[in-house]
Amino acid sequence: MAKGVNTQFGSFLLPASVARDLAKEQISSFMGGYSGASNKRSMQGWHAPSLDADSALSYDLQKLRNRSSDLIRNNPLAAGVINTKVTSIVGSGLKLKPAIKRKYLNITDEQADEWESRAEFEFNELAKSLDVSGKSSFSGLQDLAFRSVLEKGDTFALLVNKKRKNLPYTLAVQMIEAERVCNEKNKRNTDRLVDGVEKDTYGAPLRYHIITKHPGSTIDLKKATWTKVAANDANGRAQVLHLFKPLRPGQTRGIPDLAPVIDSLKQLGRYTEAELMAAVVGGMFSVFIKTEDGDGELEQLTESATNTEQELELGNGAIVGLGPNESIEVANPGRPNQAFDPFVLAILRQIGTALELPYEILIKHFTASYSASRAALIEAWRFFMSRRQWLADRFCQPIYEAAIDEAVAMGRLSAPGYFSDPFIRAAYLGAEWVGQSAGQVDPLKSAKADELLNKMGVKTLDQITKETTGGDWDANHLQLVKENTRRTKDGLNTTVSSDIGVLEPEDQQNDGDVS
Image (cartoon, rainbow, N blue to C red):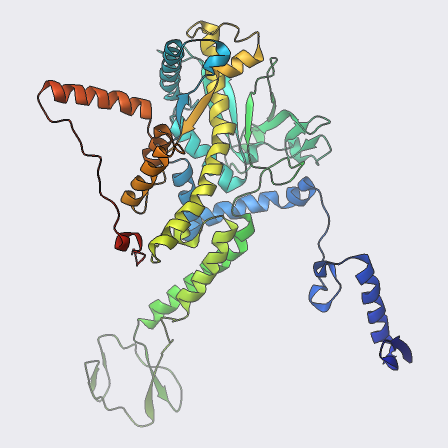
């Protein structure tokens, strides 16, 4: 039945269904102004439930881990993503540089230098044997921990005590894979227990429920038992380092790094395999002999095939006569596909955006200009540095603090007031963690820029050294003094010209292909 609707243009009749839709839209327009929440046809069928962080993740978490691990094992692009991040962020490992608060502790520079030097030496010696299994050094543990976080979403490091020969320290690190922290006998999650993490009323971890064997183990899993390990010891010091990057308030477990692009990577892998197989088939010259009776009983043609009347041979420009009612059809799959590369690159750009990797870094291919390549490196390095700082704060620094606690307790390091005042302890535990440098697309341009920034007082020589080589300026300075002293003593010219030339206009404007 038609219904009259009044508008500013007058009165006219509309079908009842259309009138109802118009009424709904008018009501919606008063309730909210976001088209993304509208009921228009493009949005119909899109049901987005409102769930808390743990409810949204817990049900899918194990499947996400399994698929992420499978992609890393079998998909070249997925493996490349993880390897690129681990190599760029961890590299050869983050190196300790103690930096105690000298003024707060009211000690001289000489005393501070001596304390830092001794603390650095003792920790570096311990770092060689930190792995409780004896398989990795501290840099290897960093690599393993960060790789596990990317693959599984989170991982755990237990700070345990282990006596070792020829080493006064007992501190050791035991790595625990994500699946081993789980509810006992697959109990359902509660407000206080979520996927093996027992929490207090504020959501802070109290205990971790750890199974003695991986749930996916095929070796006598029936004998597996659960152990509850307290998050902190009696003094409030961490015993378990839960490494993950929360994306929402209240999130208890971590999300695999590849989670947003698992579907895209899998589909792209299937497409690549299909195109590869098609190219292989296209490289094979296939001939089908068509007959009217279609009995198909012809011997396969290899280098030559024998006919009852004549010998058939494939050759360059050969003309072969066929029998009555026989014709040849050639299989032509039309490969390689000319649209393959542009399509794949378009998908890679989307994947790179989700993973915070410019696609030039993602595929290790620089064909753009100097400016574009440098911009890609800078953008990627911003992400690398943020995750490097996260790794230092969450993994390296707590382990260093536990080592210094033991050193002070044993009297190997003198630190008055260390255990009685938390602020004095914090002042002694100041440290920087330095990793490998980013490198430069054009070292000469970067050197001139650093020289100018140093003269302006924007950058120190120590900062430039860390960014350029990842080294230590103090150590470099002492080495340079030693070298110049010996060269002068031996009568060699130690004067090195600092004039490395001014960039010509054509050099500054050179923005051509760097491939």
